[in-house]
Length: 236
Figure 1: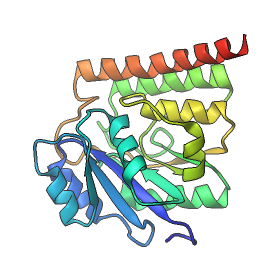
Figure 2: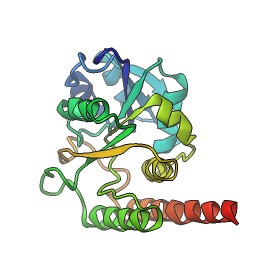
Figure 3: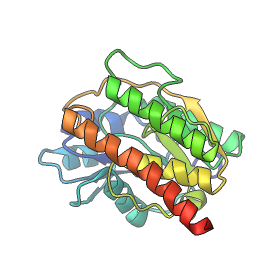
Figure 4: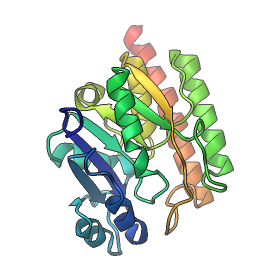
């Protein structure tokens, strides 16, 4: 329990057997009450290694980052705060406390770990990721007046605020959906600089291929324009 609040950590994972054990094992358990790893259809020992290091393991056969997150939210233990991070070791679990302290001390509802404001290892972010992030963040600022510098996966949110967002995206649009809806609904939002490491093992399912990068970018930008279109229709 962190400052009297129940904290849960959610880690979606697909074929991350080499990275998931050390990642789960390095989380400071004085900061989080439970860790849920959602096995998103792995063909390797991701589930077994996560469980061996003390994580609760759920399986979600419907592929997609958002699907895995939604599974953990629906079926995970109760929590006042939820932290999300990737399962490839690119996020540094030693920085969980930085997100939590900002959320509580600044009385924020949502804290985004910004890789662009922090320190990234060489090769940790591809050119496509950097460009796509910058473009999406610029569009959000233009359309909703909220300044983000990153759409990174490492984030903390109060559960009550998350419920207000009514998250739905099953795939690559999960992070941008959260940030757009947070802007639309007036959540108290903060960013903190975080480290970005080269993935610790395995292959990226998104940025590692041209096709994956294109699909992710298309989904993210499509969500931004669709959300603004729906907002306009509701007002007119």
